[in-house]
Amino acid sequence: MVKLMTIIQNYNNFDWRKYMDYYPDLKKAPSINNKQSAWKHWVMHGMKEQRQFFAVNTERSYLRQDFFEDNYTIYITRHMNNEETSKYWKHNYECLRRIYKKVKIVVIDDNSHESFTMGDEEVSDVTFFYSSKENDNKFGCKDFTKRGEMLPFYYFHTYGKTKYAVFLHDSVFIQHHIHDNMFEDDFLSFWSFNSVSWYVQLRDAMNKCISKFEKSRELENVWKNLNCWQGTFGGICIVSRDYVDELEKDYKFISIGLKEVDSRDKRMLLERLLSIFYFHKHDRSPHTLFADIHLWSRGTFGKSWGLKWDEYQGNPRLKKAQVVKIWSGRGMLLPGEEIGLR
Image (cartoon, rainbow, N blue to C red; front, side, top):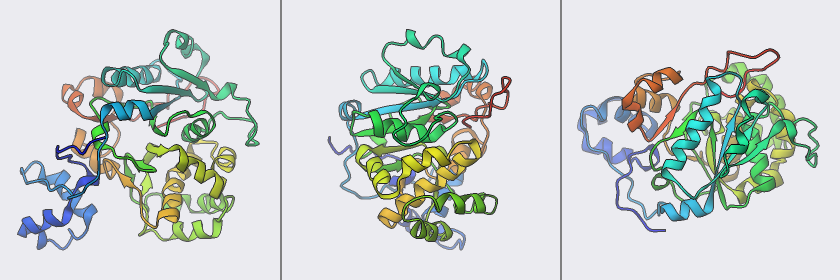
């Protein structure tokens, strides 16, 4: 690895204090008083006004491409229930292979309709796992389907061969190099969201879920302290094998999580649990590459939520974006199907 001199303009590398000091008008704005609010100004206004970006002065080493390809595995979790959603993982895979020829790619199929999985054997440079065929019950879970974002943690913990992993939804497309945004760390989230989001609606379910894990009393205290953590959007993250193993050892994360997180609604709990575990272990929120999902969405494609596949396909400007997240449209279900990933 080498330290790159390129100024990387992401939330993790944003020196908000220098940004504020350089622009006196911002210092006079009472609503801009922390990193998150300063970043919001940069995304919403600063870039358009051609204000200067200030990078954190750090000796942090960002990753070389050869190190990334040798030491990371990319896990793509998919759920295909119609013709449109069957295209996502293929496009995801094609984007990755255009950039990274050697990196290991694993596709985790979570309960897709079998009519859409028939061509998997034609893709020779991908390892496929199928939740509907999983029969390893050492965690005491008789059914691995509908576990969604829990599954990458399980498969990486059980079968992973590299030091690090990147966990993606099939609806997240990496279109340009991402390794030079990354540095070695035990946990990096792609996007965050405000801890108060859906707090009231999920409070009872979250309290019940947390009570199942080891050190539940301490985790409950973090959960209730909304000022100390930000959620991990979609469970989309970069993790080390050692950290995943620690989560299982310290909290029984995988063995309990596989039993508790068994629906889309409950996977909303996982987005919060990941950040709560991290805060409990490190006394801070995890680093994020692209900060708040709503701000990133607005800065990338002009609205805070809900980019659709057809909009993405019809917008050449989005092809220039480093990463694109679409909202999946998996509401169009086959008989007997349950809504899967976003």
